Length: 250
Ligand SMILES: [Zn+2]
Image (cartoon, rainbow, N blue to C red; front, side, top):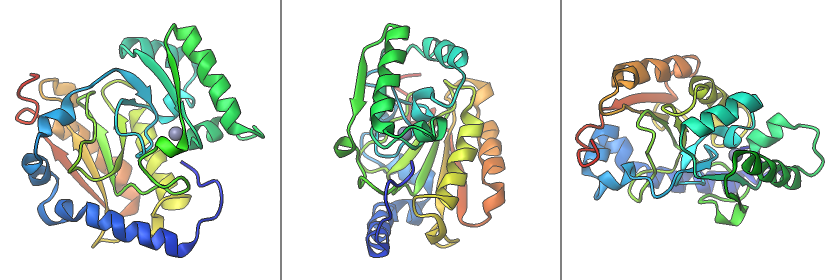
């Protein structure tokens, strides 16, 4: 989440241009039409395994929670992870949420793995640490143009959908605050920040649950708009009803 060392401005600019290419269809068609026209879109709503992963846009698959819950209280984290039916606990290298939770650690990557292993043991789950080389993004830069606010609980980014971080609104009670924090970090600390404009905004895509009225498009869109309110035109909110997209699972 936080860049470990200063990154050259031209590198950021090149990544920005490349990310815009990846999001060209989204810009042209809007989120609904992009989802409706993406081949095998139903696969975006099939979980291959219930791995708990960070919201980092470099991690495409899993159930997403900042730092695997490192910002939550221990009791709350463990209770919600059990309720979500998590089968594997993961952490990842250069995790900004971990650094935020433990700002005084001199070796945060090592401490993060020790913490992750302890948590996995306490939960009786297998543990995996994701190295920075395995992330689908440059090691030192966040390149998300999209925030997926996931009410379905099973969304995973498939080829054809632009890179974006994912917040699991269905499974975790802190989702609203997590979304707000993530937006604040993107615009203040890391990622493309000031490059976002009305013309090339950060897209906040809310994915409604197909049947649960407490996770409707209307509710999630209102929450997303609330989180985006302070940023004006550089954040564009759209909500998607997933009934048709998830028709084989509903
Ligand atoms: Zn992280």
